[in-house]
Length: 321
Image: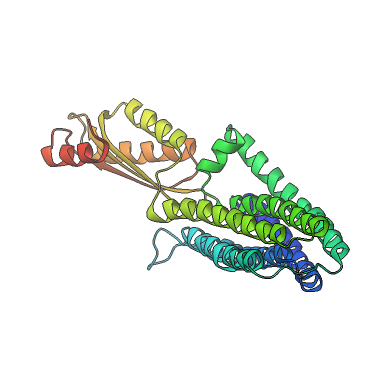
């Protein structure tokens, strides 16, 4: 877990350094060329820089140990700050890109001085963004391979929003650079600033889409998403196979942080168990669960009769027949 955190921190730091350098270059080029797409890309990189700073805050604060006020730890801080990063992408990047795009499309046509500056800056930016993107891709692929899942499925189920955010950010950045280059080139060839404005609007759409995708992911984790289906299925099988358990009545899981899962199980134990047998069985089952699934941070096992009508009604209300 410490090694994964170190990998995530390094990935975010690489992205932060690359985005800061790129933001400065794009801003200078945008002011020289007057290109709306270039200025939109500068705002894009500024938003990405703020995002990396927020992700570093997420990594640092989510690592704080549990205390009296937060007995389950601070793991969800990572999701909160990652959600703020998604908001930053939209407000700082997408909104400005839309503004510049529509202002250019519906404004007066203007010439584009020194477009070669824009081409050079975008080429250098593509290389720098590519370095950061390759770093994120390597980590995401390694983690996907370790979980035994295809990349797309891993990204859907991952409870670490930091690397996922960097991956989507850098992918959007590379696409945005291509759009800006196309807008710059078409403006240069045709003399019409509409192409430049259209590229800026498309960059805004791209950023809004990424912000929505990341925001939706972190929303689910903040509300309290169920653990990975593989963990849920494995825990269910282990609990049902315990010799002291007559029936698994209910199983609740919630992701409380990256690599942290809360598990609560209601079990109908065999009637011939003494109170001591029951206590020892709970201790043993909890230990077996943690051995099988190291991400289980807290485990609660509750003995209940499966015939209790109120409990049955609650379970059916949640899962259906």
